[in-house]
Length: 120
Image (cartoon, rainbow, N blue to C red; front, side, top):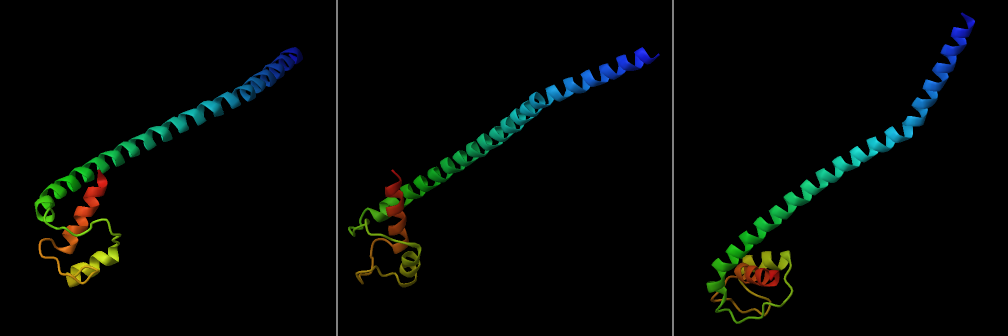
């Protein structure tokens, strides 16, 4: 009977040792699965963002095509720097920085033309 207890004790120690030997492998495989899952989620997010970018670009190009006939006659320089405050001010006053009122194109349309020209 004592011999069987010693044999069971040895088996228990060996099984415990084998389990501890397997832990790093299990942890590594778990980490691989987690990283693969995160990679898949991030690729899906990037794909979704790229689709949104394509949609926005097509909308902007459609708007540019609608504004093109209106802004073609405007001979003013579209290369000047325009920020949001300038656009809001121009929309309110309908006057550009050099104090000339635009006849052919409103300031917001002029600004939109500039932005769409810079896309390509």
